[in-house]
Image (tube, rainbow, N blue to C red; front, side, top):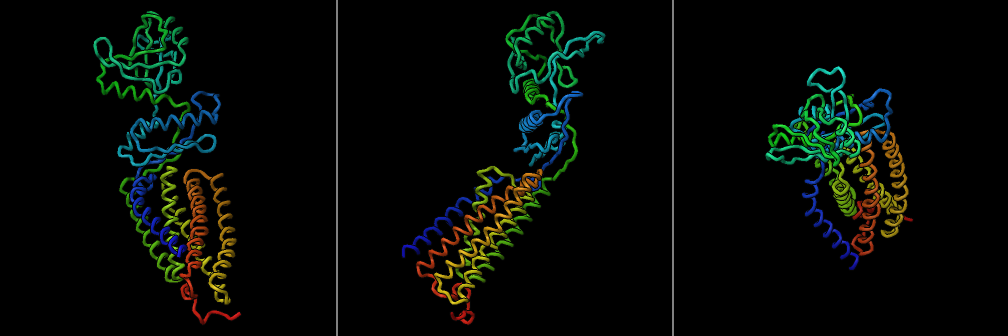
Length: 416
C-alpha cells in the first residue's frame, strides 16, 4: 500500500508542477533567429595595422566590443562567438530595423583626438594624438556647461599622457573626430591633469545622448569583413516555429498512443517519463539560458526518439522474460538489468560522437551537440532510473500481477 501511495503522490506532484510551470517556462525560452527572425553575420577579422599580429585575446576583445555595441543599439540578447583563429559570428534575433543595425555593426565608430600636421590645409587635422583605446570604456556621459547646454565628457586611461599632450598643444587646436567627422575643434587653454576631456557643441539632449552612446561603443580592436550573412524575416521565423510546434505535438501524441497501446500500463509509465523528460529539458533551456534554434529542435527530437527507443528496449526485454515463463517480479528485474547495459552502450557512444561534433564543429553544429548531450543525460535519468523505479513500485505494490498488463498473451508464454 505504501508503494502504491508513493507512486500516486509522485505522479500527481510532478504532474501538478509541470502543468503549473510549463506555460511560464515556454515564455522564457530564448528563440534563435531562425525561429524569431533576425540576421547572422560571419566576420573575418584582421589587424587594423599592417604587420600587426592577430591574437586570440584581440579576437575575443573584438567579440566583446561587438556584443556591447549590439546591446547599446537595443537589440534582444545578441549572440557573439569566436570561431577558429580569425572569425567572429554574430547572431541577433528579433530585429525590426535590420538595415540600421547592420550598418552600425559594420561601420564601428573610431574616436580620435587630432592636431594639425605640417602641410595640413587650414581647418583640417590629420595627426592622430589619441585613439579610442586610450579612453575608458563606457565613461562618456552627458553633463551641463555654465550655460546649461549639454556637453559630453570622456575620461582617458593615462592621465599623464593626456596632461603632456594638452601642455604641448596649449594655444592650439585639439580636434575631436568620430571616424572622419569632426565633432569639435576646441583650442587647448591649459594643461588638463584630471584625465577628463569634454566635447561641446550646439547639441540637443537627444543628440548628446546618442553621441555619448556611440562613443561608449568604442573602437573595435580589429578590422572586420563580412564573409557570410543570413537574414530571416520575423514572419518566416514565426511560421517555422508554428510548423515545428505543430509537427512536434502530432508526433508526440502518436508516440504516446503507440506506447500505451503496445505496452499497456508500463507504456503509461514510459509515456509519463517521456513527458517529464521533455519538461526537464525545457527547464534546463531556461536555467542555462540556451538559445533554441532549428538545429536545436532537431537534437531535441532526436533525443526524444532515443528516449522512446530506451523504453521500447526495456519493455521488450521484460516481455521476453515473461514469455520464457518467469514471474512478474523476476521478469521486471531481469528486463531492467539487461536493457540497462544495451541502452547505456548506445547512449555513451552517442555522447562521444556529440563531444567530437562540439570539439570540431562551429556555430549551429556546436549547439546541436550540446543539446544532444543534455538530452541523453536527461534520458538516462528519466527513462532508465525514474521509469524503472516507478515500474518497480507498481510491481512490488501488487498492482501489476498478470502478463496481460504488459501486453503479453497467455498463449505466448513458454513453460519452463
